[in-house]
Length: 320
Image (cartoon, rainbow, N blue to C red; front, side):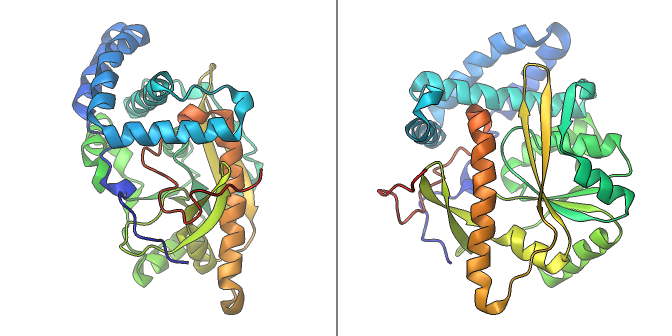
């Protein structure tokens, strides 16, 4: 269950290399509104797409994979589709800045199926929330800020996005308060997180990027018709924390935004003899839900690297 050597890890992709341009565009939005912002966004996007060949090719490969897997979506996979993909990313970055700048209408955020989370909060029970790079994770943080009874600690690898995180901190220092940068999960970190959960808090971790490690441990699961590597860290952490596990997905909508919560497991146990099998099952269940939500808003999944590059089954297809 060890990944093959990859040509390009996601952490080496500078997703926010146009932060300076986004800062300017944020000022344009504050002064003139979203339409002028969008008009000025296009040249920034054109430059970024032209300059970042790896991200451009990864976007096109992803769109082609979705198109092949779900032809009925009629998803454009040429340069026009790539442009729409990056435009959605630019809109997402603006939304992050608006959220922490106090300019995003949080009353336009629709919460779906949050009953399990609400019940856990009422009972003083903490848990683990596995999120994705679909939509806007900042919505999770801001909803936690606006509802103090929900305590969130978001585990991140922020080295690839330090400039953008500094910008968020300038907009609102609270944007950094519930972030915990982790590269390796040490026993001390696990104990600290266990204490947080025992106090009724929630730990948030992404489930769709493999760890920043020379030999990351992964499980293979079908995603958009191909075998892809998924991290096992969230499930190992869940087994250590011995707490309920939830999934969280978000996406922009015509009305504003939507955040969906799903109950995943009441308890994750990894018996030694069945450990790999259990991890494969957990990753497969997560991948199926990620695929479902990605197909609802395919341009809003922001993993601009070759998600399947590690696959030993690159030329094979997993049945729908």
